[in-house]
Length: 84
Image (cartoon, rainbow, N blue to C red):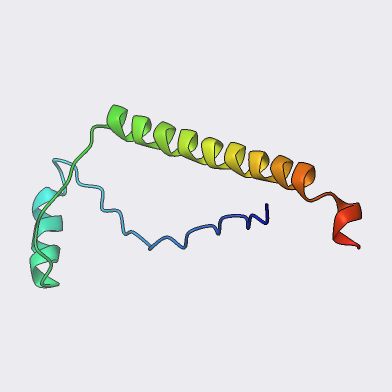
């Protein structure tokens, strides 16, 4: 088994805009000024925390999968076989 470790994906940069009841009009005006469609996908502070927890779980799962791949490589591709 000659398994390559999965590459870490290169993620796109995301610009977060925090909108509150106090700055909503200003934010929408700036978005229109920058010719950005003023569409907002919102989360409550509790849901944002859940999103962060979900990403942490995904990261932990990926780390676990890498460890499994490493163990398979150790078992199926021991060092003494590689040097021959």
